[in-house]
Length: 384
Image 1 (cartoon, rainbow, N blue to C red):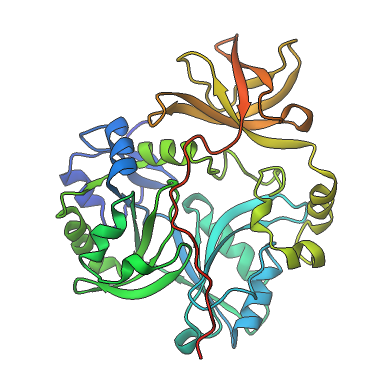
Image 2 (tube, helix red, strand yellow):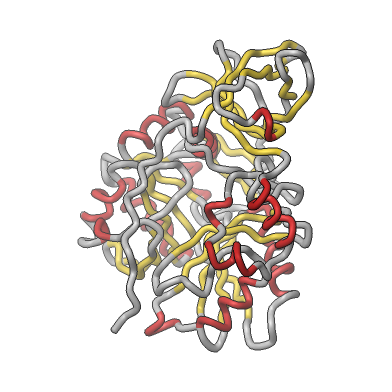
């Protein structure tokens, strides 16, 4: 990837990346760090064993604001298949914006803010490359009493088994947060909105912070010897090992949540009631199974299969395509994900991945390639 920093947008942490010797690349219209001086492999393994710090300020952050929670939730439920009305205060959920055919326009995170101060407000985080289209799509479909308010905040992610311990030294009690919950708190002298979540498969936090406070927070976190900066290269290999989808690659407007093995993100009430875009297709696929499915693929040998590689049976019939592929540093071998016809999606199925015109033997395996290390969720209760 070429360095096009002269034409790209910059996050508020851009100068910090340059000072740290980052190799910068264009990504989603921004000049972003691909890697720092230690390299992608070292950054990947450091995140798995300690705590990696990521700048994800290019992501879109916005609030949906209505007169009460049920009104705002109903507005968002008209656009996605998740149960939003059932969110408890401070609870977070993963979902997807859907088109009328049940395809995925984008995936996103939604948090219900504490009702005692923000009843009727939902906090959204959407993908950088899709945010303008997402905002336009949402705004065009909102009722008159619900508004979308975009926020120019910075966003950083601290990921890894020592992330909680690092933040505990700055904000005692943050380690008690449950997975997929959010809290407003102070890290040192800086107010932030922190959620216990992330996209690496590791325990960790995503931290939304006022843009002018972000460089100070970045430096405070890096002052801890357990923390090192990590770029987009390792972020991609970490999420691939964790079997997590990348929008525009593993999911897009043609793939449904069921095909993408994201049916777990559709709660029981929504499965039964429908009422979301593409409900007929998605309910049919939930009932009968999809025609194709996203699977894990473990190639034999050392040659990785990249996105776009054809997937064939051992007899040479094309049955799918690789959507993400590369080297898995944690397991020391190539890994890949892709879509195959449902009949070939059974773990243990032997297939060929066509790499450089040659068939490479691979096996269908369950995802993830590396076990996720999320903390267990805890039940949330409405405040008394």
